[in-house]
Image 1 (spheres, rainbow, N blue to C red):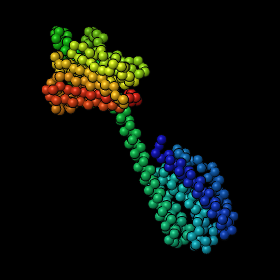
Image 2 (tube, rainbow, N blue to C red):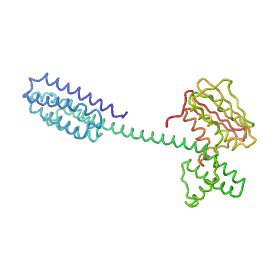
Image 3 (tube, rainbow, N blue to C red):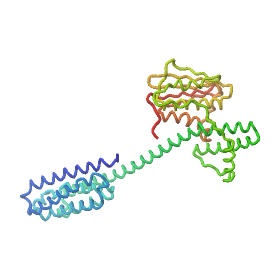
Image 4 (cartoon, rainbow, N blue to C red):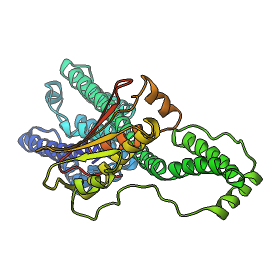
Length: 402
């Protein structure tokens, strides 16, 4: 809901209430006017105007500039007409003008619609009309004029600040949504395309010959894609003809390769243990409760993918002889998975360097997934003593809407 919509609704109520107040003052002092019929004619026009236009100030679209000019003009005419229909004694005694405080509604409409500048113009015109109607700057008149002038400009300024804040918030939400979508795509790229390119590079180099050339090109594309994922610019290292030749060569030898990992579970509650158990093998031990650990399917799939990313890091950086242990814990308010290895650990500052280089395994595939679930990923590593990653997902968690 727009931040200024309540202001328009309040202005509608103000105009209706102040019209009732102005009519009550008129009827109570009807016989004291010098020309009561002229005053009655104006009050009738004012009442008819309100009956037709009361809903025009319920939204900024309905409150047009022409309406504001007409509304303010009607208020000014009523103020100036008071000097002609009321007695000099009543005017000198501080009697209210015909529109009374209803005129403030016209000024407030200018403030809400156009900000403090429109409010300054409208309140100044009303101030001049009040001083002209009184004929002299009496103390109560100056007090009322200053009150309307200051309050309307303050409200106009508040409206401008509210609009700027609303635009800033909308922009921030757009940036957040775009960032989340980018991180989701980056995770998918990291878990799929980048791993395939890395595998092609390693196997191509090992096979030699034409496969080595394919591996070299896969390595170049992996670096370029990591740069793009990390938010950098792609340097034009190869010509369009070379890229076309590379693409044709890749298509000629490409095989449908998919990275290993647990399949996504069907919709509904899912046993996290069943998703993690296939990781157990010669170098990986799995331990968990004897009963199913249920979690929403989408959250369970993201948690399992984060565990797969953690095990991938173990295989890549801890060496072939390293062992890993997966511990699944079923807590009352959360599901906790701990992945620990006995590798050499992570040197201080290495994670930040990897993120700058576009290697987003920890930043996106692990921490990004858990953040989107409303959980957390804590990483503890001591050089020479291995690495431990604790993944915590709260109950009822699920991927946030993009």
